[in-house]
Length: 242
Length: 242
DNA sequence: CGGCGGCCTTGATTTCGGTCAAGGCCTCGC
DNA sequence: GCGAGGCCTTGACCGAAATCAAGGCCGCCG
Image (cartoon, rainbow over all chains, first blue to last red; front, side, top):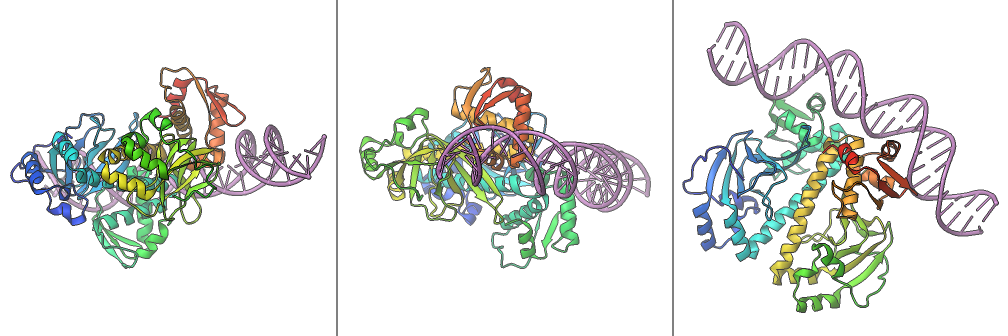
């Protein structure tokens, strides 16, 4: 991964605090000795929205842990049509093991802080510690499940179901405690309307219209174009098409 | 995985010949001793089109290797809308490690022959042999790449691009030697029109119309509704939307 | 302040693909 | 052979979402 922004701080790497939070980070799998080794080569970075983290077909030379913020994974057709194929929240792991080139782009959707490691270090440790590979395997299986869920949304849901599903997905990722029982939640959208459209396979206008409809139907409120309050969680769920 | 058809033969398991063919099978990762252990508990089976191999939310108690034929992985919404989220060709591995329940359905699209193992046996071996886990990890990464490629098709391509992409994908999987250079290929469609529609997020009628268009434009020929001959590979590729 | 550029919303119109409906073609079993 | 059922094709029509176009809101910078 080539981080195109200057490294913000290469001081004491933060590594694992936030990783532990949701038990999906890399670091918990390592013994203290390995951690120290990794710490030496890792660096914490802060990246502004819109910065490209991994370019398509570009040689990837490091892996990262997302510490905060949201990273969007995109693919494009040659004529410019774009599709977001995944979102990574903290503490997801960023990078494609066992391949020199990435087939996708990764871009900061919000301000993102990252902890990155040289590819070689991670791969060496993966050989030594099956537990690390096991963790990454599990994350990959989760991503596969998520991708397949999303394929159903892309292929079979209407525009309004797509938008409702998107809001639910974001709510659940930002506030993991939210579930059907919750009456309401609120959160900041990590994506612009254009991003949401690219995620849902829609146009900006359609996304906007559907959000307006949810607003006029009192299912959600939106302040500042970014801050969403779900007024009626179960109504939103009903509109997401199961 | 519950195979709902009677086991065809529990004699000498075939295990690995066809797995080796494309280097994605489970078995190559095992040492001879492990292979013998696995052979004792495995069984080869033949499954007819339409048979369900893994039911949604059903307890999965075995894994399988696909030896021949095509398995479709599907997900459904509560109202019956369905989406195919993946196709497995020989020698893919079938089953979701580390989860008791499957979130998807698996169904034989063609006649399928399988070699299945008790879940417990595979998981024990995975612990003993990191090389096995490594293989499964790699297949999972491939499936993730494929799922993401397909998300672009679902979200951003037109109906005619979808159908062209589908034909190319099938051609490449059935005859791995096919590439851009090839002028033409021919193969049997492993899916019905209804399946293709569920795979592409379209209706049967739209799939049929697009196939007709490809036929009248002399890009393909179709015999018996199943046997497809691509007359002009590069023309098909151009229609697939890159 | 005022103008510019991003981002979002809204309306009018078009179009692609879905829906509804009819009919053709095979295969299989009688 | 003949009829039934499954699968596929074709046509007419309709509607959801795309496209085209205009304008609003807001933050930023001169």
